[in-house]
Amino acid sequence: MFDSESEQEDEYVPAVLQRPKVANHVVHESFTVDTRDHEDHTFCGVMFDVRCRAAGTDGGAPLEFLDVNGISVRGLLGPLTVWSTAESYKGKEHMQDAWELVYEREHEPSRSEYEKLEFTKAVRLAPGQTCGLYVHSKLPGDNALVYDNKRSAMTYEDEVFQVFPGLAHLSNRPFGRRGMWGFPWRDNREFVGRIHYGVGYTLWNPEVHQQFPVEFRNAVKECLLCARRPESPLHSMQDDVIFYIVNMCKYDWFSVGPRSRSVSTHEGLHRNTRTIGMRPPPPPYIRNQPGRGTGWTASSRSPDSLGYSPAARPKAFPSRPHLAQSSPSDDEAADVLSD
Image 1: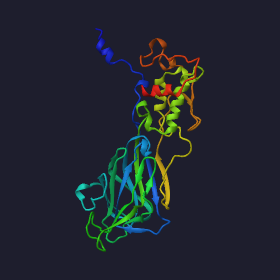
Image 2 (image 1 turned 90 degrees about the vertical axis):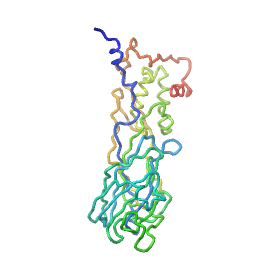
Image 3 (image 1 turned 180 degrees about the vertical axis):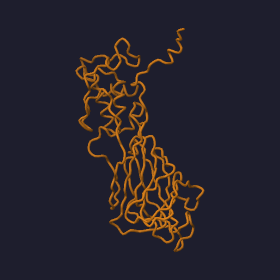
Image 4 (image 1 turned 120 degrees about the vertical axis):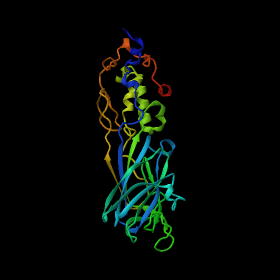
């Protein structure tokens, strides 16, 4: 028997109408704030804040979350623990109950090479969110962990992540109130080592258009304007097809020049390493990509070859009027993005 309700439920929806909002892969980054050119300092621990930058007025990249999944440190090490707390470490120096233990293990000395401490649970930050990190060693003495004196208001900053100066701890007891020379905390200190984090980037869609860099927004506008010119290869594509193509592009795809990294005035060496980070493959109707910032070339494939015949085109694909007498304007592109 024919079941009309079942057929409606199983109705095919084209991929271009199901654009994802968040990348289905996590890009992993790591950076180094290395002070080997300075006089090394060592204490029992260091406590500091980190922050996930937000897009828009904060100047950060468009993202949904940032996972801090490990750090690397050097020194005599010993029995190490790493703790995290929401918002900030400030006012929680002796409040162990306000912290969550994310790493605990004993390590052999590593004076010059960084030893990675991979968290048992990633510390997830939303855009604009801050948390405190505390690295500590129970090793007797004060040679366990290398740190440095504060040299700027920001220890490190890139497009998505910020590290702030904090406190050094002189007690080999976590959150201890007594140090080897009285009061256990020393302010204006900086973390030395490497922080590993993964980022879930936001994918472009009209509703988040303003969160993307100006170069990206301009590229979207140009694509829409070209699509309104009958002589353009993009004219054969409906807006949703163009949206689907742009949705597959990373936020810095159209940026000119190298990626912006640390803007800190720290005098130490900032060595940045991308450990994993592959862009998703381009859609099948992109023939080639000369390079970031130079755009891409559309193939000669028509909407019909993508499964959209004029007779069976979804209602979401209205027929685009030909603009033979006038050139498309910025307002037209803005109207499309605001729909």
